[in-house]
Amino acid sequence: MSDTEKKTGSKTFKEYYADPEFKKKHLAYVKEKVMCDCGKEISRSNMSAHVKTKLHQKKLDRSVLEDIEKKYLDMILQEQIKNNK
Picture 1 (cartoon, helix red, strand yellow):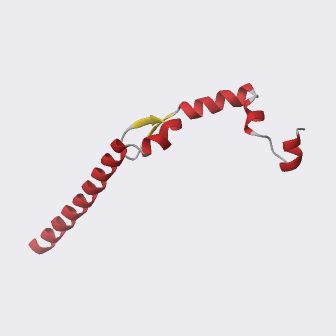
Picture 2: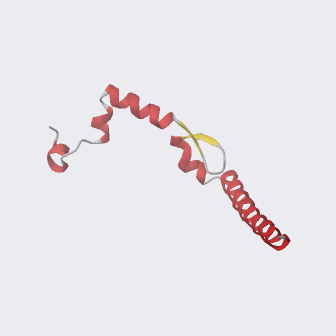
Picture 3: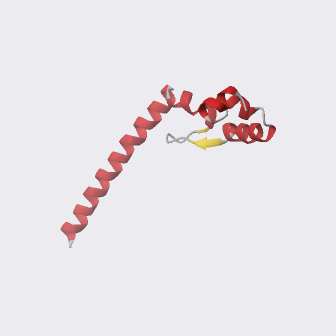
């Protein structure tokens, strides 16, 4: 047991990473592609940086506006259907 394990009862990341099986699983997780809310597919490790980009902000703002517009149009359509009955 290392000094860190004795103090906290757990291993450090460096100690876990020395295990080849853990390293393989961790790299696969980090390299995994995920779909961002803005619609772009990126690797998990780049998600934090991607969220800060202008491209992400513009796409997200645009999608929020489209959602609001869609809800508004649905509401108007429902009112027109009620009025025609």
